[in-house]
Image 1 (cartoon, one colour):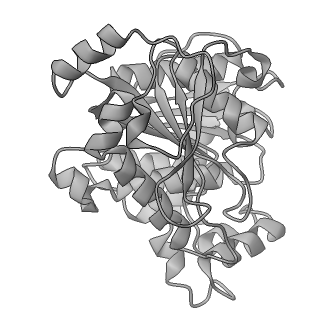
Image 2 (cartoon, rainbow, N blue to C red; image 1 turned 30 degrees about the vertical axis):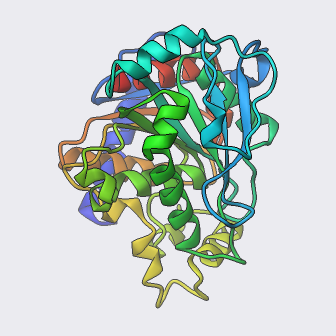
Amino acid sequence: MNPGRRSVLALVAAVVALGVATGCSTDPLGDGNTTVTADSVIYPLSLQYHGIDVVADVPYGADPLQRMDVCLPADSEPETSATPTATPTAGASAAPDDAAAAAAAGPGTGRPAVMMIHGGSWSHGDKATAAYRSVCQYLASEGFVTFNVDYRLAPTDPFPAGLDDVRRALDYVFRPATLETYDVDPQRVGLFGGSAGGNLAAMLAVTDHESSAFAEGDRVRAVVDLSGPTNLTRRSTEPDGVSASFQRKQLLYLGCRSYVACPAAVRASPEYHVTSDTAPFFIGHSTDEFIPLWESQEFAATLREHDVPVTFVAVEGSAHSIAQLDEAMSRRVVTFLRAELG
């Protein structure tokens, strides 16, 4: 075992031994590690969302999978003229005078927003599944305009198709027409992803400085990554790495037959692309799930080496991705997003 790996494992052991927080406690956020227990209920699925409209299947590209749903806070209604193919559900309760006043006030007066990316091993999954739809509505109920994104899937469309799609979706969010339609402040946009979606959200964040929007001042300000694979290289195939079945899915996504000669593995791994410009992260990862804990542990360490603030929450057990979102974890995520997006 190499010295760096030993130091990471020692850090994990120290954090677990401390038992910094448990269950429903309200633990402090900021640059630090926390270990918690979790309930088995996905909290957003347990709620009713009255007045939270969903604008379904807004196109951000020509492919049938290049679509997003927009979950709207209960106090506003979009200007649907900018997205003629989208139809909001009934029940919006916006005050037109308030919307007009916000528009007249100019930039910097809009609402915070989150772009959400579903999981599914990069090969399946859907923005409209009950679990991801409920998380979208939950974030909207907490005041965030939430863009819930679909993207092309492997093996039909391997890397970088999915990453290209979510980058295109993010560019769509930053379009002036989109910002105006949904009353979004471009200085208050974050990302949320679970599992493969966590990988894609992290990749967007660590390569954010390469986008044209970054040069214009529009950039990602916060990232929530739940169980996202962050090291897709041969390193992830070691005995304590991902399962054999997931390795096969990972290779299909990378478009490689093996890890021996697979340059896409580094290109698709957030671990290798962190810069000091990367936005603050909230990372949630269970201690005994099929994506190994060390991936997120080492990713957090790399972020901190670049002075990027990280709130790291280790969840005891095997809950994967958004299955971690019991009531306490849901509140932690919202508290982080509010702190970073205002």
